[in-house]
Length: 266
Image 1 (cartoon, rainbow, N blue to C red):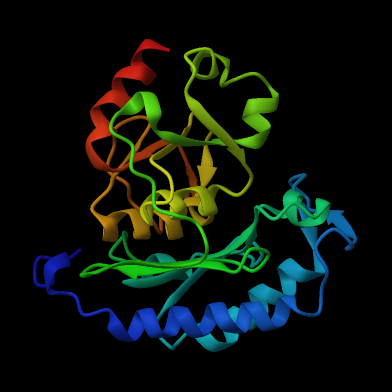
Image 2 (cartoon, rainbow, N blue to C red):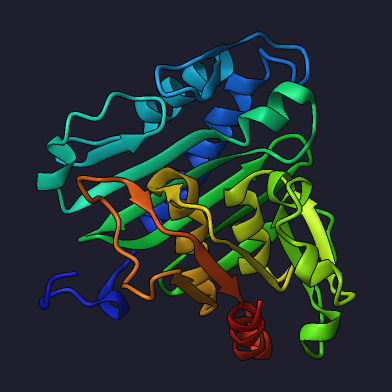
C-alpha cells in the first residue's frame, strides 16, 4: 500500500458491490453443472479441473475485470502483466474441486481484491449450502447462511476447521487426542471465510497453498480484525511473481495466543 493511501483511507464499497455481482454471476454459471455428476481432467501440474471451473472463471472475469486491473486465477494462464498493476483480482473459480466432483458440499467460489499486495476486499460463496461471506477494509464480513455463531470461551471448546485430507492422513491426531473439536472440511477458502464470519474459531495448515486458495479468506479475516499469519511469520503479501505461499494460522477472538502455543507444542 502506498504511503498516500493507507488501509484506513480506502473506500471499497464499489468493489464490494462488484464482488457480490460476480458471485451472483458465478452462481448462475454453476446452475448448468451438477456437483457429484461432472467429468474432470488432469491439468499439466496434476491438479483436477472441470468444465465448471473454466466456465465460472470466464463468467467472473467478464463482469469483474476493468482496464488497468490485474488478474490472477487458478484457471487462467498467468501472463505476469498483473505485477505492474496496483489493483489485482485473485480468483479461485472453484476452491475444493475434489469435493465438487464428489458431491461433498464443502467447495466455494473465492474472490479477492489486492491493492499494492494487500488483500483488502473479498467474497466467498458456497452454492451447495447457500452460504456467502463478503467484506473488506472498513466493512466487517457479512455472512448469509444458516450456521449459528460460535462462542468459545477458550481453546478447549473452540471449533477448529481442519483439512479433510490432512485429517485422513493422520496429521491432526495430536489435536484430536486432546479432545479438541476438530471438524474436517474441504475448501481452504471456505474454512477461512467461516472463521472470519465467526462461524468457527480457528483453522490452520502447514501445507503450502497458492495465492488464489487463501486471498479471499485472508481479505475477510483482515476485515474481521482476526488473527492471520503465515507459517514463516513473514508479512502476508499477494500478487507476487511466485504464487506459492507457506502454510498459515487463522483464528479469531481471545484464543489466538492459545492456538499459537498449541502449534508450537505439537
